[in-house]
Each structure stands twice: as structure tokens, then as C-alpha cells.
Image (cartoon, rainbow, N blue to C red):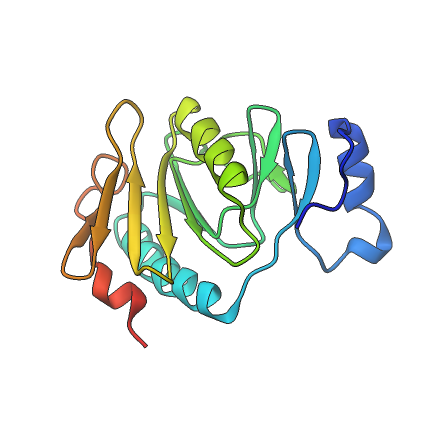
Length: 182
């Protein structure tokens, strides 16, 4: 849901999100516009399933940190809040205490919600890829996960397939069927 239709500056965005009435809301800054992040129970459940498995793998292997739907990142001057993100200790040894991490994540997991638009998602995926971030886009309605890896073609996974952590999460493997199971 786009809240402002005129383009604003990064500073205007920061002032807006710090208003007291916005304290319990999440916003992204996409193409000069403020976009409120609104999920659904189906999307949230999907994100939690993915987050829990990624977190266990990351913690067990001492790879880095995982953030949830309240952890923001700066990506090419825009500010995104992926549903789940991973950043390695190698890329960011210390955990910054900021609203939008200036270091882009190694992996961003976006779970589609009814409010997401194709244009918004295309822009975010393009910026993530340009920044070197691997992106997994889960669609609870079609029960698919699109895997975007910089300089590689998109791969669409369905029930019966497994998502592989590749170079970002070595040894990670997760059944797509589990992600969308009730």
C-alpha cells in the first residue's frame, strides 16, 4: 500500500517513520515513495517457517545473523524490510543497532502478501541482485519459491523440490512442501 504518491527524499522518509503515530508500523522506501509493509496470516506463517529453518542452520554453523520482518536494510538508497534476511559475520562482524542496516543482506527472503505489486517486487529484486544479494520470493498462493541469484537465471521451485542454500548458506536444504504445509 503506497502512502505517498509524490516522490520524497530519504530524510523525509526518516522523519515520517519516526513520527509517534508510526511507532508500531513498518515502512519501506521504494522509488521515492513510502510503502507500508502489511502482511497476511498466510504470508506470515510462510515467513516464520522459512525463518525458523534458516535461523537454526545459521546458528548451528555460526554463519552470521538472521533478521525478521522488523529488520530493515539499505539497498541502493532505498530502504527494504525483507520478511527474513541473512547477513554473514564475514560481511558484518558487529551487529549494528540501526533501523535500516547500511550493509545489504547476503540473502533476502520476501513472502508475497496481497498488498505487494509486481512493479514494487521487480524493483526490489533488481536492486537486491545489483547489490549482490540472493533473493528467495515465496508465493503462498501458487506454492512456489522463485530463487534469484546474481548473474544466473531465475529458478522456480514447486512442491516436490528442495531449496538449496548454495554459496550463501552452504549445506542448507529445505523442502518446498514443508514451507507451504498447513
